[in-house]
Length: 323
Ligand code: FES
Image (tube, rainbow, N blue to C red; front, side, top):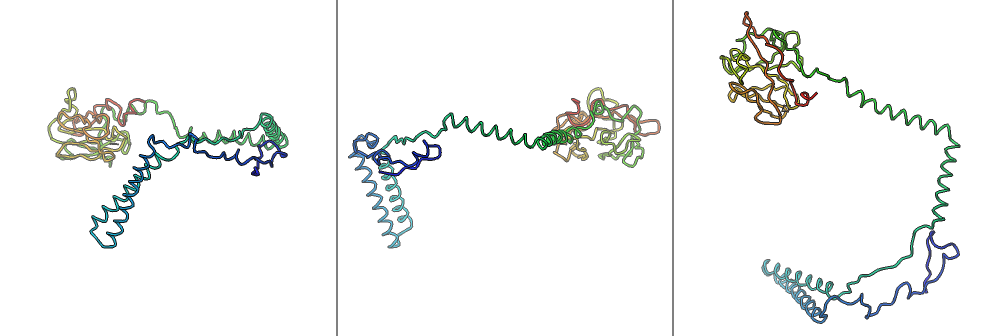
């Protein structure tokens, strides 16, 4: 007989100590029990195979020990050890798979769930105690609720304020207008022949030096008029080709002009734009999704460069186009 201790969820204090017959807890095993029968149909044959491999494994280990003792070649030692390990492992696996009881083995146990009455009693205790605590601390509960509400609103401030003003149409236009005079970073007017062949210059409309949306790069691959595509026959007088400097990928300044390949390079993510005769700044490499907008120029009576008007499309990344 064996002493058995029940847990708190058991039947009650008077039943906490009771005895259970040993043969009920641990049923006596019998060779006739179907769960204890080996899986092999021909048990003797399986025994023979497992035993044979175990013997081979034993001999392999013994041979390995002898070869090591005699300092035979490493290859021979490795071969003996390999044979020993393989045969021994195979023999053990065959024993386990074909000769040991296969089950299934099931252990019954008593239910652990609480009774309905216990669940009801617990719920009543928790709800009642919780309500009582809040009633007793009504003032603190009110403050807690108000504080949580204010905190929720205040935490939304950074998000709402960071959205900033609505851009409306501000991305659709720049300060370039019909007749805008072209100036460099120092505000100096730019003449049609100031830029050497193969050179480039960052320019702005007069009065807006440094403005991010207005920044424009002029490249001069030749001193003859350049037509990047049909309809732009007058846009690049004496080879002065002007493109928005705001990359159409993420807005970095496209500041590098490669004279030999006649390409503009954006240093941020290496977008390359083809510029020149018949090359309207279409991206040929990198993530930029569309060409750099071209600014139409003309030369005034004094020989200075001026804009024929604003860009014909929004400058900068593609999403600005959809604003
Ligand atoms: S910003 Fe120019 S390639 Fe990304």
